[in-house]
Image (tube, rainbow, N blue to C red; front, top):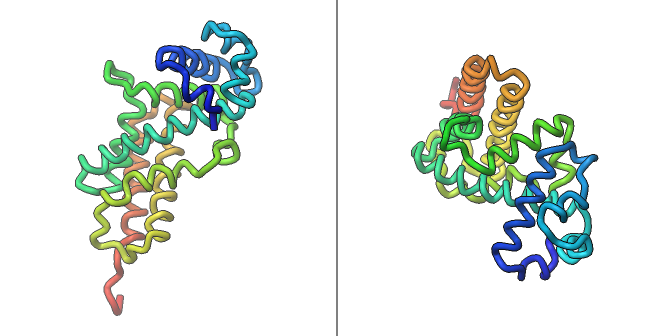
Length: 206
């Protein structure tokens, strides 16, 4: 978590610092990120950095937490738009995250650039809390669980994790092989249907 000094910064100065941080983390792999370049880009003394964050790892976790909060809000809107259907929301998220048009989502763009720069990055080890659970908390009450064989929160969480992993894998596949985006989307749609069917209540005696 950032220090109170950072939290109390004027909005313009805080935004300038974060823009410089995003630019650096999405420009080079994590191992090559330079605090010097961040503070130069933000126009602040190097010592000020350590009044805000302990090190670059803490700053990176903060940036990823921003992404997680943004995805939570975005997913909530997508789930509502799809009538509570988690699987259709995942497909809509695939389309929105990879959108290259004028309405491209800013956090999606930043996050994708970081993924491109760090294909072997283990986000689960870096982040303080599981991003999937963070997003699920934002959308849980919006989900339509009609027909599910269980509405226990743990079961829904596992469904969310499995379907989310399928989505993340599809997004990474497109980043590696953008020419096959449509085929990859069709495969994702098939996987979502398989997971959906596995969630449905099975009639007695079948």
